[in-house]
Image 1 (cartoon, rainbow, N blue to C red):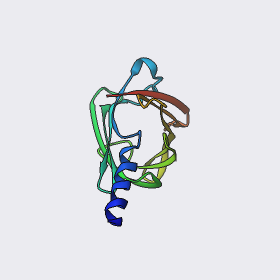
Image 2 (image 1 turned 45 degrees about the horizontal axis):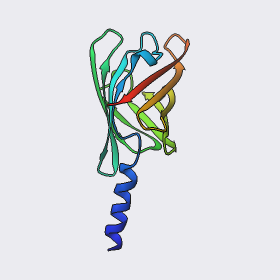
Image 3 (image 1 turned 180 degrees about the vertical axis):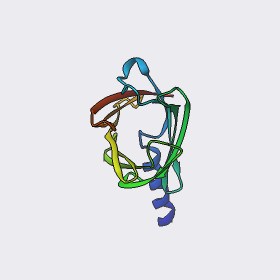
Image 4 (image 1 turned 180 degrees about the horizontal axis):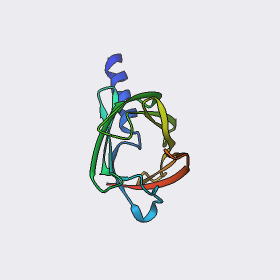
Length: 147
Protein backbone atom coordinates (compact mmCIF):
# COMPACT_ATOMS: atom_id res chain seq x y z
CA UNK A 1 0.00 0.00 0.00
CA UNK A 2 2.81 2.43 0.88
CA UNK A 3 4.51 1.72 -2.48
CA UNK A 4 1.26 2.42 -4.34
CA UNK A 5 0.75 5.66 -2.41
CA UNK A 6 4.37 6.71 -3.05
CA UNK A 7 3.99 5.97 -6.78
CA UNK A 8 0.70 7.88 -6.93
CA UNK A 9 2.27 10.90 -5.22
CA UNK A 10 5.18 10.85 -7.70
CA UNK A 11 2.82 10.76 -10.70
CA UNK A 12 0.77 13.62 -9.28
CA UNK A 13 3.83 15.78 -8.64
CA UNK A 14 5.24 15.21 -12.15
CA UNK A 15 1.86 15.72 -13.80
CA UNK A 16 1.39 18.96 -11.91
CA UNK A 17 4.61 20.37 -13.43
CA UNK A 18 3.45 23.44 -15.39
CA UNK A 19 6.27 22.97 -17.94
CA UNK A 20 4.56 19.81 -19.28
CA UNK A 21 2.56 20.01 -22.49
CA UNK A 22 2.90 21.51 -25.95
CA UNK A 23 4.01 25.12 -26.40
CA UNK A 24 3.62 27.14 -29.63
CA UNK A 25 5.84 30.13 -30.42
CA UNK A 26 4.08 33.50 -30.31
CA UNK A 27 6.33 35.52 -32.62
CA UNK A 28 4.41 38.76 -32.06
CA UNK A 29 5.38 38.75 -28.37
CA UNK A 30 8.91 37.44 -28.91
CA UNK A 31 12.24 39.15 -29.56
CA UNK A 32 14.20 36.45 -31.37
CA UNK A 33 17.95 36.54 -31.89
CA UNK A 34 18.67 37.41 -35.55
CA UNK A 35 20.34 34.55 -37.43
CA UNK A 36 19.62 31.96 -34.75
CA UNK A 37 16.57 30.18 -36.12
CA UNK A 38 13.45 29.60 -34.07
CA UNK A 39 11.72 26.84 -32.17
CA UNK A 40 8.10 26.91 -33.27
CA UNK A 41 6.79 24.00 -31.16
CA UNK A 42 8.22 22.62 -27.92
CA UNK A 43 6.66 19.59 -26.24
CA UNK A 44 7.46 18.37 -22.71
CA UNK A 45 6.26 14.89 -21.69
CA UNK A 46 7.03 12.47 -18.90
CA UNK A 47 9.29 9.65 -20.13
CA UNK A 48 9.71 6.95 -17.47
CA UNK A 49 11.51 8.76 -14.63
CA UNK A 50 12.76 11.51 -16.96
CA UNK A 51 11.40 14.32 -19.11
CA UNK A 52 11.38 14.15 -22.91
CA UNK A 53 11.52 17.48 -24.74
CA UNK A 54 10.87 17.52 -28.48
CA UNK A 55 11.59 20.72 -30.37
CA UNK A 56 10.49 21.52 -33.92
CA UNK A 57 11.34 24.70 -35.76
CA UNK A 58 13.46 26.19 -38.51
CA UNK A 59 17.16 27.05 -38.70
CA UNK A 60 18.57 30.43 -39.73
CA UNK A 61 18.07 29.49 -43.40
CA UNK A 62 14.42 28.45 -42.91
CA UNK A 63 15.11 24.69 -43.12
CA UNK A 64 13.08 22.47 -40.75
CA UNK A 65 14.73 21.34 -37.52
CA UNK A 66 13.81 18.57 -35.09
CA UNK A 67 15.62 17.71 -31.87
CA UNK A 68 14.94 15.50 -28.85
CA UNK A 69 16.32 15.73 -25.32
CA UNK A 70 15.66 13.17 -22.57
CA UNK A 71 16.89 13.87 -19.05
CA UNK A 72 16.12 15.30 -15.65
CA UNK A 73 15.84 18.85 -14.40
CA UNK A 74 18.83 18.28 -12.11
CA UNK A 75 21.45 20.64 -13.58
CA UNK A 76 23.38 17.84 -15.30
CA UNK A 77 23.96 17.92 -19.07
CA UNK A 78 22.12 15.24 -21.06
CA UNK A 79 22.62 14.60 -24.80
CA UNK A 80 20.54 16.50 -27.34
CA UNK A 81 19.87 14.59 -30.56
CA UNK A 82 19.12 16.21 -33.90
CA UNK A 83 20.63 19.67 -33.40
CA UNK A 84 23.63 20.67 -35.55
CA UNK A 85 24.48 23.63 -33.29
CA UNK A 86 24.12 21.97 -29.85
CA UNK A 87 24.78 18.48 -28.49
CA UNK A 88 23.85 18.68 -24.79
CA UNK A 89 21.47 20.62 -22.56
CA UNK A 90 21.25 20.98 -18.78
CA UNK A 91 18.01 22.07 -17.06
CA UNK A 92 17.75 22.97 -13.40
CA UNK A 93 14.54 23.61 -11.49
CA UNK A 94 14.51 27.03 -9.82
CA UNK A 95 10.94 26.87 -8.49
CA UNK A 96 7.55 25.38 -9.43
CA UNK A 97 7.27 27.44 -12.63
CA UNK A 98 10.89 28.26 -13.52
CA UNK A 99 13.84 26.34 -14.95
CA UNK A 100 17.34 27.46 -15.83
CA UNK A 101 18.82 26.13 -19.06
CA UNK A 102 22.43 25.81 -20.25
CA UNK A 103 23.09 24.61 -23.80
CA UNK A 104 26.40 23.08 -24.83
CA UNK A 105 28.32 22.32 -28.00
CA UNK A 106 31.29 19.99 -27.49
CA UNK A 107 31.41 20.84 -23.78
CA UNK A 108 31.39 24.63 -24.25
CA UNK A 109 28.41 26.79 -23.26
CA UNK A 110 26.57 28.02 -26.37
CA UNK A 111 23.94 30.03 -24.50
CA UNK A 112 22.05 30.00 -21.22
CA UNK A 113 18.76 31.28 -19.98
CA UNK A 114 15.59 30.93 -17.97
CA UNK A 115 12.22 29.35 -18.79
CA UNK A 116 9.31 30.75 -16.78
CA UNK A 117 5.70 29.60 -17.01
CA UNK A 118 3.13 32.33 -16.27
CA UNK A 119 1.08 31.99 -13.08
CA UNK A 120 -2.03 31.11 -15.13
CA UNK A 121 -0.11 28.32 -16.94
CA UNK A 122 -1.19 29.58 -20.38
CA UNK A 123 2.16 30.96 -21.56
CA UNK A 124 5.87 30.68 -20.90
CA UNK A 125 8.79 32.99 -21.59
CA UNK A 126 12.27 31.81 -22.50
CA UNK A 127 14.99 34.43 -22.05
CA UNK A 128 18.47 33.62 -23.35
CA UNK A 129 21.89 35.20 -23.50
CA UNK A 130 25.21 34.15 -24.91
CA UNK A 131 28.11 35.04 -27.15
CA UNK A 132 28.15 34.16 -30.85
CA UNK A 133 31.08 32.71 -32.85
CA UNK A 134 32.34 36.25 -33.56
CA UNK A 135 32.43 37.17 -29.86
CA UNK A 136 29.33 39.35 -30.05
CA UNK A 137 26.97 39.09 -27.06
CA UNK A 138 23.29 38.43 -27.74
CA UNK A 139 20.03 38.27 -25.81
CA UNK A 140 16.63 37.05 -26.87
CA UNK A 141 13.13 36.36 -25.64
CA UNK A 142 10.73 33.74 -26.98
CA UNK A 143 7.14 33.68 -25.74
CA UNK A 144 5.11 30.49 -26.13
CA UNK A 145 1.41 29.84 -25.69
CA UNK A 146 0.09 26.53 -24.36
CA UNK A 147 -1.17 24.65 -27.40
